[in-house]
Length: 208
Image (cartoon, rainbow, N blue to C red; front, top):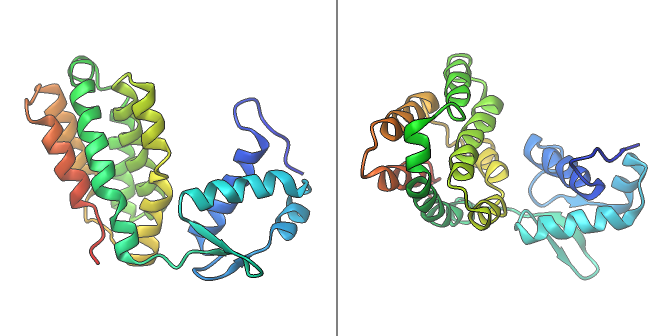
């Protein structure tokens, strides 16, 4: 049975469980997700499961239809691509706001770059996704704007990055190299840091 920790609510834990199932391929595109089965499996009531599924429908990961239940959306490259211009715009703003802070101290970004070098070397796709997203989350957090961070988080970056790699094979040769270059740009106070980040994000988009 799931026991809610201090930080995450029961609904959030259930949502993460379902997301992990989608990303790992337990539930494939077009496959039905049965609310009651998840509730039984996790030994919870159906109410938080329903709430978690509603959130994932907002993220466009799943879709529901009368008399057909809930299914994993059969996302195309075009569907996944739509998120990147929005993300790029948000991260351009974040980079510009965070630039003074990160010019003085990039320690929040450095562990992710180090982990990416190892992930690239071992071709660990899961770690590449985790630390790529972690790097960008720390950059957005460094902007010091809670509205910006909340909006960025609501895009479901980690999920869509993982799905782009798993479903479409959008794998880069070196995640570490590009992110190390961004750290160098922050440290050198590059006046074009916002545009550099924007181009970096758009360059990661899948192609329809």
